[in-house]
Length: 304
Image 1: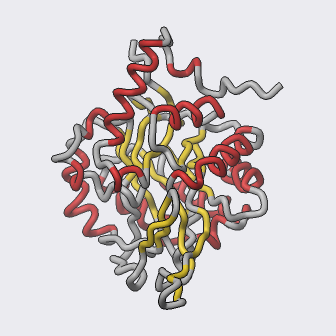
Image 2 (image 1 turned 90 degrees about the vertical axis):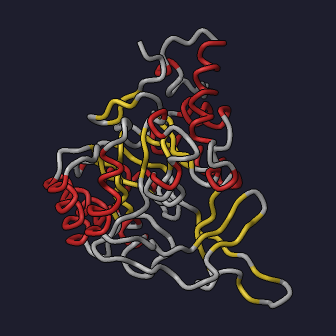
């Protein structure tokens, strides 16, 4: 028995360690650095209907215990993804999940339709929560009704695992989680980045061209843990925890709180081998603590 195996919707993952969209390219960029097949899954950079150049520079700024980004969903577009990126991904012995971005509900649907026709992916992560694009983006994820409409349209197109990525920048993440679940989502990614801003004191100008961007890294982990806990009280489908994971202890904290799996993001920029290392660290932890099944840990938090 594989003691690290977990299930997300209709997907069986060999372990709960996945990479986060936007921090791992389309996988091939890291192939010479780690064994991608050791991972539970790989979530690609966003894919939209047409190629996107993204936001103007500067669009990354380092902060205390984290980073701000305003990439603007720069990507190759669905046709180039299918022609140039998908052939490599199809060869992997791990679960490939494609992050989907769109300006409209129909764009989300059309991108999924094109990838479905090409085949070779295990699931889709609907990016309804990106805080750094003017059109679409977070406006979808800020509304329970629109989140439900996007999810329902996608559900009609695919039987693959359907994951909705939630934003923390909303009044009630629990309400939006329930809407996504009711509309057919198999799982929820919790959470996307937190809106933040930094100023250059020498120039007195914002450090990002877009003024604000998405804060990620260790600084947001306590927020992410709290959002995972909140969503476990609102929805019954599996949760993938995201936010500031740098160590095995961080992974365990998310799992204990109720996440079935995690995504590693900003840490990839500091240590490109971190995701594979976390698989090894988690194996060692289970062996040292005589844990035969990682599911024994998931949701084991004691609050009374």
